[in-house]
Length: 162
Image (tube, rainbow, N blue to C red; front, side, top):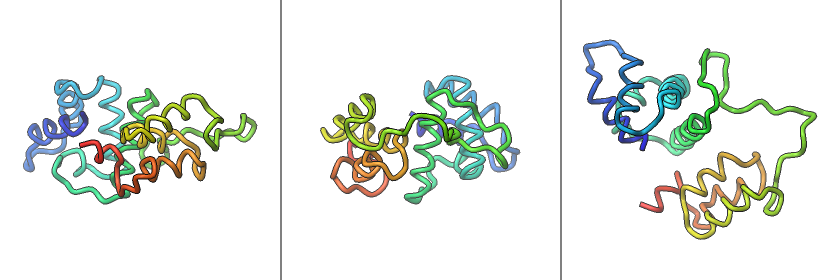
C-alpha cells in the first residue's frame, strides 16, 4: 500500500524541482494508501529516519535494517501515533514509563500479541512483522516474530507471503 503511494510520489517529483512535502502527502492519499494524517506522519518520519531519497525513489533497494525501519515507521504512522514534529529530537517509539505494569514478554501474557503469534505461526507474514514491532524488546514474542514464526526469513516476513 505504501509502495504504491511511493510510486505516485516519485512520479510527482522531478530532480530539478525542490521536494514538495504537501504533494508527496497528497499523492499517498490520492493513491488510496493512507489517510492525510497518516501520510504526513509517514512522509515526515521516512524523511527524518532514512532520508528524503526514500520518499522520492520507490525503487531504492533497502538493506535489512532499512526494511525494519520502514516497517516500524509504517506501523507507527498507521496506529495514529503523532508525526515527528522535530526530527532531530523526537522518536517514533513511545516513551516507556518506569511505574507502569510490566510489558508482556511471553506467549500467554497478552491476548492481542497471542493472536498475532498464532497468525504468524500459521504463516501470516504481516502478523509476524506486526508482532515484532508491537512486542517488547528481548521478549519471546519479538524473537518468535523475528524468525517469521520459525521460518527463518531475512527481512520482512510479509515478503514470504508474496
